[in-house]
Image (tube, rainbow, N blue to C red; front, side, top):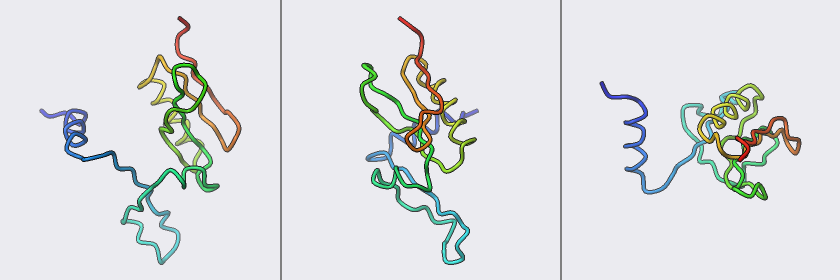
Length: 109
């Protein structure tokens, strides 16, 4: 039986570079909710996506990677929780706009 994670890894290897999508809301009748909208870093700070899960560098001086952005606090927390499992030894934050809602320091060395 093939697992989802092994096929996912193989699919990622086939891509020339990582691709991220932001799906349309579907509330606007002119939107085609089934069509993904390309997502770029410039839209990451938009007001309609105020929750961010951030992975910090080893020195805890700057954000190395934004792992998730969302409009919903529950989804943001779920992404944050998943990130603490994926990166247990790293410093992570869940932020709402400019306020830190939760932080994961990882184990003390």
